[in-house]
Image 1 (cartoon, rainbow, N blue to C red):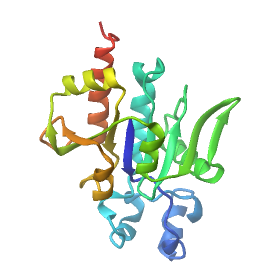
Image 2: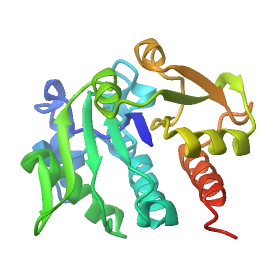
Image 3: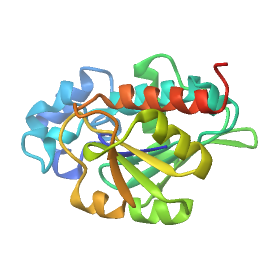
Image 4: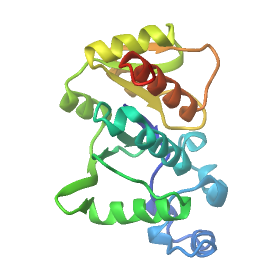
Amino acid sequence: MVLAETGLEKIPEEFINDARTARSCASIGRDKRECLLDRSLHHWMLKRMMDGEKRGRPDIAYHILLDVTDSLLYKKGFLNLFIHTYDDNVIKIGRMVRPPRSYFRFEGLMIDLFRKRRIEAGDNVLLEISKMCLSELFRNIGKPVIGLSSSGKPVKIEALASRIASTGNTFVIGGFPKGEFSDKTIKAFNEMVSINPNSLEATNVATRVIYELEKVDGMWN
C-alpha cells in the first residue's frame, strides 16, 4: 500500500521567519524548525501555499499507520506500507512497527525521523525516509500500480482485493483531505479504479481494502 501526496511535512522554509510561525509552534511546545505543518495551527499559512487544501494533515498518515500496523495482513507479513509526502519524501514502514497511541508522540516521532532519516530498534529498521518521487518508488517496488480514486473505473471491492492478492499489485490511496491526485501522480499509475462513486476518507478506503484482502487470504474464516 502506498499513501500518496500525504499532507505530512515540516513547515516550508519560506514561512519559518514569520512571527506567527514561532507563536503557533510554541503553543504546542514545539520549536518552529521542528514542527509539522498542521491545518489546525497554520491555516493562514496554507492559504498562501500551492495546493494548500491538500496539505497540513499529518493526522491522516497517523491514522493509516495505526490501521495498517493493527491489521492481521501486516502482522503476518503480507502487507508493506509506504507513505509518500506532498514534498516528495517516501517513508518506508518496516516490520513489527508499533506506532505511538498518542498523536502528540507521533508528531515527535516524525520530527525525529526527519532529523535522523532512520529509526531503528536493534537490527530492525522501523522507519526510513528518503527523498524520492512516486515514479521512482513504483520502479523500485516493481509491481503494476493501481490508483484508487472516485473518478476511476468502477470496480467491486471484492474483485479488486482478489486481484491484488493474486498478483501482488501495488495499490495507492490519497493521503490528503480533499481534491484529486496530481496529473503527475495519475500518469505514474498503470490504471485508476473506483470502489465507490462517493469521495471517501483515506482511512475508510484503507480499512475496507485491507479487510477484503484478509478475507481473500482466509484470515476471517
